Amino acid sequence: MTPPDASGSIDGPLTTSIRQWCEDGAFPVMTEPLKVASTAPNPGLDGAAADLDGSHELARLGRWPGLLWRLQLLLRECVSEHVRPQDPWDCGWWRVGSPDAAAGFRPRRATLLLVREVDMGALNTLLDALRTKSAIYEKPVRVLVISEAAQVGMERL
Image 1 (cartoon, helix red, strand yellow):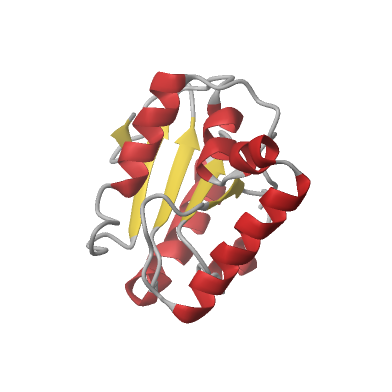
Image 2 (cartoon, one colour):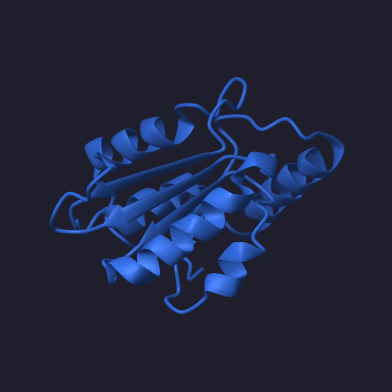
């Protein structure tokens, strides 16, 4: 994954919509280890992902308080498997051409994978690899496909 642009603009309604979709089926008990949807291109996607992954909170806190916050999160992850809605997600853009990484992927924390519009063959390869392993995911994984047109069989945000 390539990290989202943390300086991306924040679109409040878009961020709220994506967060709600990500959290649905993830909390308080994970009932959907993998969810896939599509959405139209939007310049606020990086900002929404950076909000979800905690980048904006780190910037707000500053260097030392931010480091303390990250250490507290890491400690909690080591001590407890319990995922909380307010905990940061791993967020990033899928790097085309990495189907082997998808086949071996096991999320270390709740994950949002953003996928830029790609050919359907590459997208299906990625989704098949993730679906094959999703039954053993201990943390929720969300895949958001960015495309002008709605994708057949995918929820549209």
